[in-house]
Amino acid sequence: MAAEEGKVEVDPMHQFTIVPVGSWAHWEIAGVDVTFTNSALWMLITTVVLIAFVQMGNKRQLIPGRWQMAVESLTGFVDNMVQANIGKQGRKYLPYVFSLFSFILFANILGLLPLGVAGIHPFTFTSHFTVTGILAVISFSIVLLVGFWKHGLKFFTLFVPHGTPLPMIPIIAPIEFISFMVRPFSLGLRLFVAMMAGHVLLEVLSSFVIDGTNAGIGFGVLVGLPSFLLMIGICALELLVAGIQAYVFALLTALYINDAENLH
Image (tube, rainbow, N blue to C red):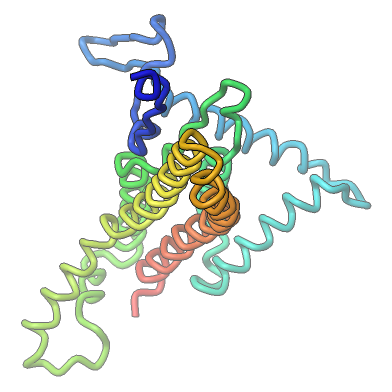
C-alpha cells in the first residue's frame, strides 16, 4: 500500500493540456471567452524573445558583434532560401517567411528548455493543431491572394500542368485541385505531429526512469539508466527536429508562394 501511495503516475498527454494561467485569467468580451491560457502565455513569451533577439542584433555596427552576426546569419539563411525557391521577386515575401520561420523555431526550442526544475513548465504550443493549422491557413491565404491578385482567373491554370494532353484535363485538374486544397492541412499536420510525438516519447522515457528508480537498484540499472541515456539522445534529436520542422514549414510556404507568383 505504501509503495502504491508513493508511486508517481506520469501522463504523457498531460503536458498538452491548455489551462488558464491563473484565476485572474478568466476573461470574457461580448460574451466570448478569451481566457488567457498557458498556450497564449508562451506565444507571448516567444514573441517577446524573438523581438528582443532581433533588436539586440539590429545595431548595424561596422564590426558586427555576436548578436548582430547571429541575426544577420539567420536573416541571410532565410533570404537565400526565399530567393532560391521564388526568385529575386521573392524578396518582398522575406519579412513574412523570416517571421514565420523564426517564430516556429523559437517556439519549438523554448518548449524544450528544462525549466521544470525551477518550477516553470514550458508549453510547446506548436504541438497543437489549432496553432499550426492557423499558421498554415495564413500562409495558404497569402498564396491565394497573391495568385488571384497577380494572375486573376488565369490562376486556375495552376491545376492544369503544362503539357497535359487535352483528354486528360478532366482527370488531372480535379486531382491537382484536391492536392492544392490539402496543402494547408498537411502543412499544419506535419509540424503538429512531429512536435507532439517527440514530447510524448520524452515523457514515456521519463516514466521508465522514475519507475525503474523506484523499483530498486536492479531495475534502476537495467531500465532507468538506459532510459535516461536514451532521453539525452532524444533531447538532442528534438533540438534538431525543432530546427528542421521550422525550416520545412518555411520552405513549403516559399514553394507555395512560388506557385502563385510564377504560376508555371
